[in-house]
Amino acid sequence: MSISDKTRKILWGRSGNRCAICRKELVVDATSADDDSVVGDEAHIISGRPNGPRHDPMLQRDQIDLQSNLILLCRIHHKMVDDQCETYAPDVLRTIKAKHEEWVASTLTNTPDRTPLRIRKIKDNIPSHLIRLTSGKEVTAVVNGACSYQVNHDELTSYDEAQLVGAFLQQVQDYGDISNELEAGQLVRATFEISESLAELEQAGFWLFGAQELQRLEGGVGPSSTWPVAILFVTRQNNPDIATFEAG
View (cartoon, rainbow, N blue to C red):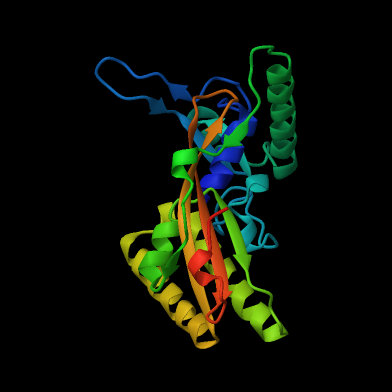
């Protein structure tokens, strides 16, 4: 797995765009000749590599890139904690991270002109209807880069149906969370696998409808940004309301 866009936004947001050790800002402003520069790293508290700093074989693979195992550091302190991993043991880094996030939260709370974070719908971006998705490429186009998901399905009548629909929606969401990190070959394989799963869904009597809605993330410490929402609806093929499904 890789660090998802959603995890990155949560980590940077809770860290206030500052190193957890020196608290220096981690984005350098653009100059007249060059773009902004990112000088921060999403450092792993426990490495996923067997010979990496603070590696723990007991930590499950799917937990390596979770927000709980990451700490935001400048590149100097990232190198320092990895070179001095005995001094900066996992518990030490977790304490540093927790205290830093408390400091960020307290600092922002005491700033009277700081607006709270919110996700806002934009009227013109709300899909008027959901489109039937018939291939892996169409599905991945909806979920690529999604920061959140709005999923729904018809009433399921058996455990097998729940397993089938649940596994499919989870597969698609897992892909969306890491889509920006996949290389070309991985993208091709993932798209093919979703096509196969979609075919199984249709053989069981279901269709998939979807669309992507661009909402806005506003407030906090930085400028507003887009917040893509993947909307997915699994419906029975004989549902009489298919022609009228809307994004809501």
